[in-house]
Length: 452
Image (cartoon, rainbow, N blue to C red; front, side, top):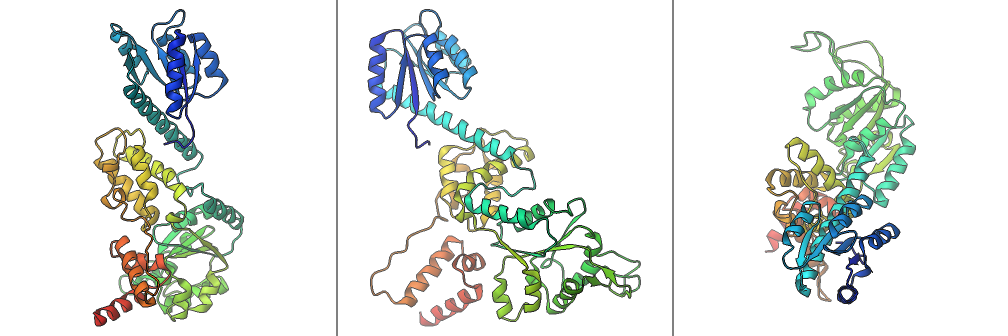
């Protein structure tokens, strides 16, 4: 897995063996050092990082098993492969119980030896990578935005600067990118963090109920109103109100929300008392809100009130270096949830995760890892545990090639059809990927049907 040259220390009291092994392993691309005794080997292990020790079992003074035990105290991730002569297999098995990866019998066979060493190094690389991921995850909390890519670091720097203010924030980004998580992070970093963070999904509540959900109602204001009910603005007083999918609001509700943002006041449904809206509003949408404004579906004046600060979450395909970190995070979460234990990911599984384009973003990745945890029967997630489209690379970007002179309309059709294929036919996701509207795709498909 590693792109760097890996270090092997050969330990054998016979000089001819050391020289021969060094020559063989250097030809295989390894950086090789050697030592004539266990004590000399310990000195070299302390001098520089070593990935693997290939040691003879029977040596004067410190034996191979003694070296293994002592070497693991310097770096527990060092892999050991022991060389054993005929008749000492029982001792080699003892070494494996003490933590050796494997043993090879003398006289050594070059192919067998190199194969064994590469497998041992692959195991070490996987252990080191998983440990690093766990260490990075330990630095963040459950509610934090997970990501160490430059684009995410830049976003979080901006969020930290914005959070202490009471300015309204508009969070944009594709579905599944983590807009709600970013909103929570803004609240947690704000001066309102001691009060409540209240969420309203404007697209999930019927239009007839959204007004009373937001502002509450008084007794008798409508049939079934048996008493006063506080709304979300009441519940979030002193804290943060997160309006998710705000572009789903109908015009009448947009007008009421605009008044609250302009004047900082509201009344409950059926009430006459004017209440102060002491909340910090964060809104989010996965739609192109500027297009919604231009199409007349969203009020321009409300857009300006919401768009005081704009934070845009990147697509997961724009930050592929964050995929292993997120995958490890979800692996830990769903391992605990399903009472299972895993030793990270197989190298080919990590390669597939990193190479997939994730049209559904972080939410799709989370679902893929949960599925893998439930279905896996091994002690680590393998390629076969991943969804078919991930392991087969169906979400990977393709370079579409066109001949010179191909009509522009044909190029556009091929691009749309390929993007739809990658997104399993989901027009909303495909449109978002291409920077157009789903309506445009429907219109183009109708035109193609007439042409065909």
